[in-house]
Image: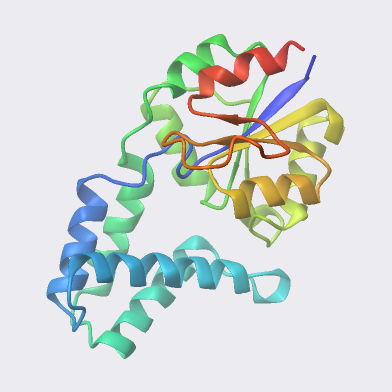
Length: 221
């Protein structure tokens, strides 16, 4: 039986949608040369992921600093004319107020072992989200703690340290092959991929589930 689970935040617990991010992208589109809202959204997330991939060690940027950089790039590349502070606040509100997936609360209630949140987002925002939904993880481990984002193994190593577990004692559950699966494997942890749309191959070398509740039987094997 496993001793704990590590659980991703964005895309696994928190849905990547909601009125705050919709308003953010609409304003970026309308205030720039971006041809469509879809193009503005793609530009935004591509830049976020690029900065996260480059952010490591002495070059580490917090998620808030990354958002400032993304807005600056939007202004330079697409002539965005907007209020920087208001756009940044919309993003912060999105991190806290985005919808929660329906299977999250039942999973927390039924999970027989402690749940640790492993996230690129800042601890403050994840903690506010958890409090809002009356969820109590055993801990929140953020990239800021180790100056590295997933899939770097430092974040997972920190989670093992805080949880007091060995890599064989835990599963890491997340929705991203690149960040969650590869990151967990880099740290010697067995990943479980959450694929709610059933878009991944069922022949993968790791478990794939469509709901967090499907993880429960793995925890008692």
